[in-house]
Picture (cartoon, rainbow, N blue to C red):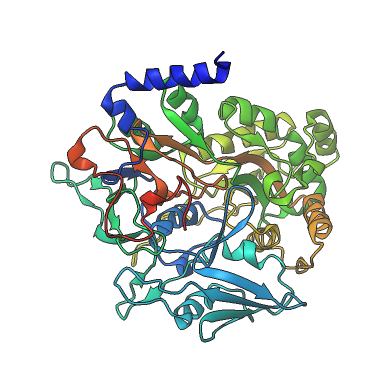
Amino acid sequence: MRSIRSLWLAGISLALAFLPPATMAARHPRVGGTLRVDLRAPAISLDPREWKTGSLSASADEKVAALVFDRLITLDDYGRFQPALAVDWSHDAALKNWQFKLRPGVKFSDGTSLTPPDVAAALQPLLPAAWQATANENSVTIRAARPAPDLLEILASGRYFIYRERADGTLLGTGPFFLAENRPAAPSEANPSAIKPAHLKFRANEECWAGRPFLDAVEITLGEPPLRQLLDLQVGRVDVTELSADLVRRAQQENLRVWSSAPVVLLALRFDAAQAASADDHLREALALSMDRETMANVLLQREAQPASALLPQWLSGYAFLLESRTDPARAKEIRASLPANEAGTAEPLRLRVDAVGDLMKLLGERVAVNARQANLSVQLVPHTSSPALPGVTPVATPPVVGLHLFAWHYDSLSPREELEALVKHLEYVEAPEIPASANSAEQLYAQERHLLDERRVVPLLALPEYTGLGASVRNWAAARWGEWRLADVWLDATDDALARPTQTSGRKNSRVAVPAGARP
C-alpha cells in the first residue's frame, strides 16, 4: 500500500505538470530588469562621513549606500556575525585591539583592488575619537581607547562602510551596484515653478566579490511626498516605496504588499532650558503624566506604532519592558495646581516646536498640546523654521524661545551602548557620564537610561517601524528586521522575456544567482 506521503507527493507533481510555463518559471530567480524605487528624502549623500547620527535622512542615506558599499562584517537574521570584506577577526584579552583579516581578490567598481590601507583610511574618520585604524600586510587593526566588546555590532551597522575616495571627491565601493547616473532636481518644463524630483540610477557591478546581483539596475526617485508614493505603487509606476505610518492601513485595504521592520524610530519630547518653565521638574512630571500614548498609537497612527516608555527599543536593549510610562491626567492636574499660575499658563505658554518635518509629526505635536491642555498646561505649537536666512534679507521676526521639542530619532547602530551614547549627546546632557563599555553592560545601560528618564528631560512617546510597499513583481524581499534593505538579493518576476535573462549565467564565478535566496558567499 502506498503511504499517504507518497500519494501527496504524487498529487503535487500532477498539479505542477498542469501549471502554465510562466507559473513554473516564476518559481526560479530571474536575472535582469530594473527595480524602480521611490524615496521621500529630497537628497541623498553617499558619503558616510557626512551623515547626521539618528536623523531620518541618515536612514535613507544608509539604504542607498548599501547598494554601493560593503562593511567588514554583517549580521544575519539569527543574530550571527557573517564575514563580508573581512573573513576572520580576533581580539586581545582586554578587548581593545581587534584585528580583521581581509578577503583576498576584492575589487572596487572601477576594477582596482581593495587594500588594507583603503580600509584603514575609510574607517578612521568614522571611528570614535582616540581610536586608530592601521593597515597591516593583509589585515586591519583597530585600537580602541577603552574595551570595546560591542565593536562587531558597531562595524556591522550604521555608517561603517568601506570606500575609496577619488581625487575628485567621489567615493568608490565594492558593493553589488555602482552609481551610473545622477540627475539633480530641476524645474518642470510644463510648470517652471514646480520642481522635478531628483533621479539616481545604479547599475549592476558585474565583478562584485559576492556575485552579480539579480537586477540589472536600480532607479531611485527622490523627493516624492507620501501620498504620491502610495499612488505610484497602486498604479505600478514603482516597485518599492516607503510608506508613511498613517497610510499603511489604506495600502493594506488596497491589497498592496506591505513589509514592516522592528520599531526603529523613536518619537519623543525633549525639554529645552532656553525657556525658564521647562527647567521646573514638577512641570515636566505633569506634562509626562498627561501624555496619552495609547490614543496617539491606536487612533492617530491606526495601530501602526507602539507606545514607548524607553529610549531604546526592546529588540535592541533587551530591558525596555522593565521601564514603564504612566498616563495619569488627574495626578497631572494636581501637580499643575501646585505650580505658580503664570508658569506654562496663558501669559507665557510652554512653546513646542516639531523638529521633524511632515504632516504626521505636526499632527502629533497638536495632540501633545491637547493632552497638556487637559492637565491645565498651556502648550503652544510654533512653526518649524528650517529655511536658512537669505543674504541681505532681514528676518521678519525673531524666532520665539522654545522650551519643548518633538523630535524623531532613528536607531542607526546595532550596539545599544553606542546608540544610547549618541542619543544622550543629541539630548545635550552635558553632565551625563560616559556609558561604560564593559562585557556585562546590560545592567549599567539600564541604570543609565533609568537615570535619564527619571530626570524627565526627555519623554518617550512612540516607537515606529519603517514600512515599505512592494510591487507585485518584487521577489525575495529579505530586508533586515532593523530596516536595512538588501536589494542585491531582490529579483523581478517579469513576464517579458526580453527583460529577464536565463537564471544561470556562464563564465562567471560566485554568481549571486547560484547561491540560495538571501545568501551571499
